[in-house]
Length: 223
View (cartoon, rainbow, N blue to C red):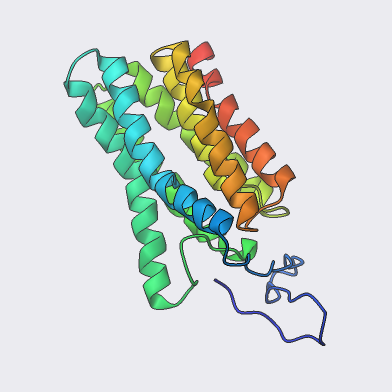
C-alpha cells in the first residue's frame, strides 16, 4: 500500500509522483467493511496468481506429459511463474517497499514484472534443456509474452494482473486438456468482481486483463 499526499477536505488522495514524470494514479479509498467486501477479500486471496498458477500449471503439465512426470514440470512452471514472484513481492513488503501484495501504486510495479520475466525465462531454459513436454513449455512462453504486454500497458494504465492470470490459467487448461475447462470461467469472473469490489481496479481494467489472459491460449493454436 503506497503512501498518499495530503489534500484539502473532500479532495481525493493521489499516489506519490513518479520520478520519471509519469502521472500517478488516483488512490481509491478502501471499501467499507461489509459482508460483500469480506467475500471479495476472501476470493481475491484464494484465487491470487500464486495459487491459480500452482493449480493450473500442475494440470497443464500433467496434460502435456500424459503421466505423473508432468506434475514435476508443472511444479517448475508454477514455481517460476507464480511462487518466486510472490516471494519477491513478500520480501519487498517486509522491507517496506509497499504495503501488501496488491501494490496499488502502478508506478512501483515494474520491478515485479522484470522478476517474473526473468524467472519464467530461467524456468523455460531449464525446460528446454530437460526436454520438457511441448505443452508446458508453450504455456511458459505464453505467460512470458503476456507479462511483456502487462508491463507495457502498466506504464500508462493499471491493467489487472490478477484477472489476466486467472483467465490465462482457464484458457490454457482448456487448450492443453479439454474445452470443458472453460466451465471454470466463473472463477475468472469472481476474480474480476473481487478486484473491482475492493477498488483495486476499474471494470475496464479487469476486462482488459481477462481478455489478455484468454489470448494466451493462442500459443497452443500456433505451437
